Length: 221
Image (cartoon, helix red, strand yellow):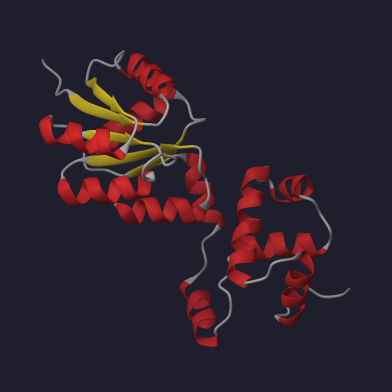
């Protein structure tokens, strides 16, 4: 019985990453890495001449971000499936990449089996989010009622987890202490802090605490 070969293009700005992934992926009978590309120009030029099933897409790229490349590829080649393979675990990046047309999102610090599982799942028209990415998404979820209330009142839309982080910032916890208290990584805490400052339009801890007090999110007790 012959397996259908999944043709994969790796788009990453590090040639070493491309070569390393190629060696590991081609241990799988059903996967063939047809090429690698280190820029949008290289990727689009390759796609003009050769058919590809899956693209593993980095987000930090020299000419244009992986998000922009994904938009371009999906516009020109709608049948090509794209999986983000990146270091970014910020909810805003994850959201933009999925909106751009990615069918999967996995982190570079994952194990090789998860990359293979993602490729096979997406090739079968499924979607794949690594467990780390699912956790980030869950941490940033709000209920539809919360979103509607915030929109009607013109308030910043903070998720339940962001409010928890904000309350600990008000107690003068540092990132490590917040991470320990909420059982999340320091990188995730930092992502939440960035999102909180952006959403509340504040630029300092003092401004943030003032905002939190005005909105009744923290008390002086």
